[in-house]
Amino acid sequence: MKKIEAVVPSARLDRTFSALKELNLGGITYYDSKGQGQIPRPEMHSGRGTGTYRPEFNVNATIVIVAKDAMVTKVVDKILESTSSGLAGEGKIFISDVDDVLDIGSKQRGESAI
Image (tube, rainbow, N blue to C red; front, top):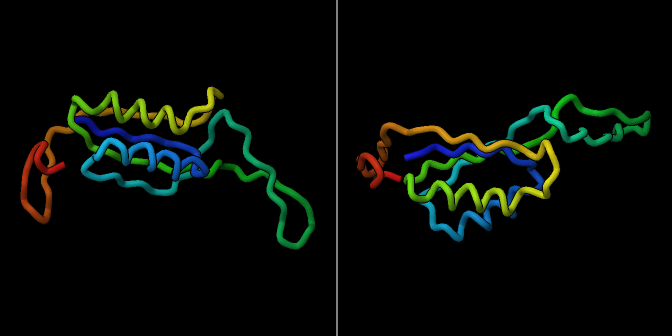
C-alpha cells in the first residue's frame, strides 16, 4: 500500500475530486494548507480601500489517499490530469509506503481496510 499526498491549488480541488471519483477509491481526505512555491502570490485588496498587499503564502489543499500498489499510477495520473497546466510551481505529489492500515469501525486490517 502507498500513501499519496498531493499539494494542489485550492482552486482546482473540485476538478481533482471529480477525477478521483472515477477510480472508486475507498476514501479521500483533504485539508486546507498554505505554502510558498514558484507560483507568484496573488495581489489582494484591503477591505477599506487603503491599498493592496501580497500574502506571504499561497492557499493550497493537501489531498491524502491510501491506495493499493496497483492503483498508485492511476491515482497520480488523475491528479496530474486534473491539476496541471504545465506551469512550474503548481504543487507536489509525495508517495510513501504504508506498512499497515486498521479500520476503526470494522476492525479490518491491511488492504481490506482501505
